[in-house]
Amino acid sequence: MLRTARCLMADGHPERYRQRALAHQQSQSNPENDKYIGDAILQKTCLKDFLTKDRVKNNGHIPQYYIEDNHDAIIPREVFMQVQDEMILQRCVYSG
View 1 (tube, helix red, strand yellow):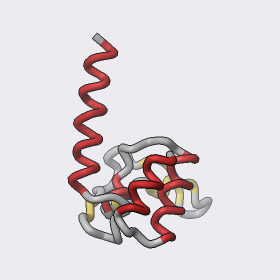
View 2 (cartoon, rainbow, N blue to C red):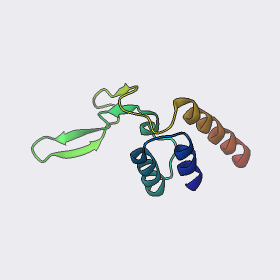
View 3 (tube, rainbow, N blue to C red):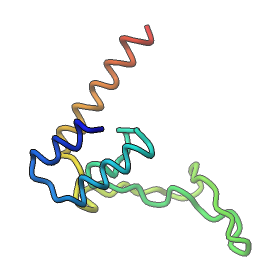
């Protein structure tokens, strides 16, 4: 967590991105989130019943949309992809 904050400070990112990155790391600790690189997935949930406004996870009920560069990225896309590659490598090393 501190390493990420130091890297963001060294790269000259605005304070709000550092705070957002730290808050997100503390709450989830999941580097697989598409929000890190500025992308968004739309329609993750859908209405089960519009009268009661019950929402359910979208498992193919309606189409989902992946939007690239939807907002400012917290970390560069290249760094995110390197982390994803490292996570796959770690899973292979420690699971087998």
